[in-house]
Image (cartoon, rainbow, N blue to C red; front, top):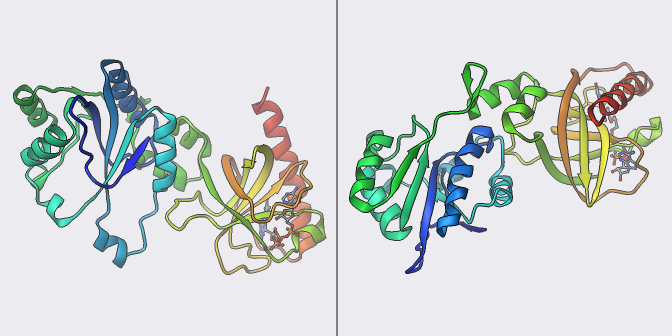
Length: 308
Ligand SMILES: Cc1cc2nc3c(=O)[nH]c(=O)nc-3n(C[C@H](O)[C@H](O)[C@H](O)COP(=O)(O)O)c2cc1C
Ligand SMILES: Nc1ncnc2c1ncn2[C@@H]1O[C@H](COP(=O)(O)OP(=O)(O)O)[C@@H](O)[C@H]1O
């Protein structure tokens, strides 16, 4: 897959099937759009996701907004889903003031040779949000592309959206988050040294520091699965500041079942299956150890049923 921050210029004979939007999370609704454009690969179209990134100025002045996926993660998932090109177009002043018609003509038609567009019914773009599915449809007649306005996928009565996923994530409702996403929510990072206290109570823990722009579930303890190298471990994970030992940074810390390896320096991916309990301040590490034994038991029972 080609990843680019410039609007691509396709070659002479090449055409594209494009979907446009923010695509935070690549949830099941987004996947439906991607399926539509992937089908057009049979007509020799390149499957393109066109997203807007924050402007370079915003990136400099503000801490990044927390998303369901980092840009790198989104890139990887888009590639796995068979996309040919991911455009992360910086949302510059110029783009912000661009007339919708100019955007379509210059970018989609002239540069990307668009033959097919898939958008949601509420998709708006361009200056004053004047670009709508109806305008795209009109322009398609002039420039020779078709537009599919794809109905939103629903969960019961509610449309699946990034906002819906974020709300459930903020409640720690991982079962719902994972159902809406169509994959198990995860974060990644390198395993770093902690205070080496875990092993003293028989519970060594792999500590990772998640990316600052990654939205995490609320602080607390979760049943998780971790991928480290080519191995997958069941485990339990604490998200938070470890009030018992008063840590200064937000960490994601996992006790891996049935693992006895030196993991420092390796990259880990932790997937969140279920929330177990809030993070608590214990009077001693021994007391914490008592609680961890209960958590481990629950984690093992969960996977026994889950993997059946
Ligand atoms: C599954 C799990 C649950 C945890 N729950 C808590 C908790 O409720 N309160 C707390 O202060 N620390 C909690 N911790 C963090 C421990 O305090 C920490 O693992 C221990 O102090 C060792 O830290 P170290 O990795 O820096 O050696 C938890 C850790 C894990 C892996
Ligand atoms: N079952 C396990 N779960 C997590 N980490 C383990 C496990 N077995 C061995 N380890 C290793 O032990 C380290 C954790 O030991 P710990 O005493 O908690 O030190 P730290 O404070 O550096 O995390 C991990 O980084 C990893 O390399």
